[in-house]
Amino acid sequence: MQSRHKNINASNLPMSETKTATVLTPRYLALAETLRAKIADGDPHVGDLLPTEHMLCETYSVSRHTVREALRLLAEAGLIARRRGAGTVVLAQEVKTTYAHRLGGLDDLTQYKRGTQLKQVRAEFVTLKPEDAKRLGLEAREYQHITGLRMIPGELPVGHTDIYMRADLAPPAAQMVERLGAIADWMAEERGVPTARVDQAIIAMALPAHLAEMLQAEAGIPALQTQRTYFDPDGNLMSKSFNTHPADRFTYEMTLNRECGNC
Amino acid sequence: MQSRHKNINASNLPMSETKTATVLTPRYLALAETLRAKIADGDPHVGDLLPTEHMLCETYSVSRHTVREALRLLAEAGLIARRRGAGTVVLAQEVKTTYAHRLGGLDDLTQYKRGTQLKQVRAEFVTLKPEDAKRLGLEAREYQHITGLRMIPGELPVGHTDIYMRADLAPPAAQMVERLGAIADWMAEERGVPTARVDQAIIAMALPAHLAEMLQAEAGIPALQTQRTYFDPDGNLMSKSFNTHPADRFTYEMTLNRECGNC
DNA sequence: AAGTGGTCTAGACCACTGG
DNA sequence: CAGTGGTCTAGACCACTTA
Image (cartoon, rainbow over all chains, first blue to last red; front, side, top):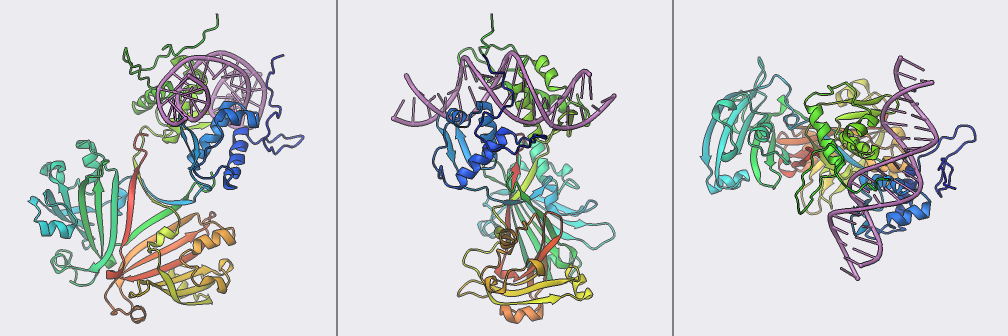
């Protein structure tokens, strides 16, 4: 007689069951939890192999699909890694709580409200001298050097922007004005080189004299500077920007959210 | 005769196939790509329903499992949402590239290297006056107020730490020293209240006189201050910290990585 | 009540890894 | 080469939504 597999509990999994309302935990969830607990107990230690899918099917009397669904959860949680032909290895004993600062796009990185514009833009190609390159944390090669003031109409300048973009990636000068702030997006769209990583440093400094006048501020007052370095997927530097703001005109704000506590 | 379903292409999906090396794109991937393209073309517009799984099985001559695997990918990419009984609705026309600043844990938030210690710790319970509460961005209630200096042995103090922790969550004074920096973790472990969100603001300021002496620095020089507010899962404020650093002793650094461009 | 997506089974072939 | 995980099929029952 072929079993018409009604959901009779043939599995060896813990179940939360009431006589009337059978609020079943799905088997794959129960199995995932069972395996998670075993891993937490160090049953398969980190680096060891989990039983094969076939084995788990037998042990817990569930189908392979159910086993795979459970393992998928553990894999997403970063507890295990699966390699075809090799087996399933334990990566970590517990799920690590992580936090993330998430941006919709790179524009959000600049933190500027809508309505800010880059004014007094100047752009020129420069070949950095070794000492300047070193000071800026760049290679001594040719860059498109762009400077400008970040403005909100009717207010004092928010900050000064200073960008070095690899010359071969720079947009035509015509498009440049007003397109900035979205440089990274521009590069991705037009040059087909997506930004894969951005390193950002935020420092306090005394406002340099050569910026003070442009910003209509006093030299030497506290200033906040963000330094951003953009890298392509191969890890090559694409561009670097320096944004300097008088302290009372700009605050860098971010929200970090907890990710996938226990899943 | 029962078809023993060899992988003969009975499906209507695009395949990259060579005569010799049949490098198959898995059907579920091909289907996912097909559907993604259709959504991008606005075939099912945002807000509309996708064909049902059963329909997709027929249309593309694949099994339901394959359809579900494809839909799972689209769901993970945020393009669709699936609701049992209701159907699959299109959420977005295109996958939005996002970037994330990811932390292993909240300790990484402080950016302090290992080996830094909190010294000269003072702790007391205070009930904030309304004007102080407003200035600090807190409610006028009772807090455990903790101050200290972040030190690296043999060097000048890195910064000054100033924490207001909700009184009912504060750890016993005995445990407090040397446990700080990991406050959030402490609260999660011992009080069972996990931190769900952290808001952080980074500002430049002139070093206040009352901190200058402790930090062995000159009052009025540029300083970097991080302000962190910790929230529990219900959005209630748990604690707030102010960390003030002379500009030349501390830099805030972070790396943002591109997430799931096209998957 | 009909139809949706969620769970589950039994079985198959495959690409890949390792000894 | 045997065994792993990856893909796929055909079918089933279920909880849930909507009308």
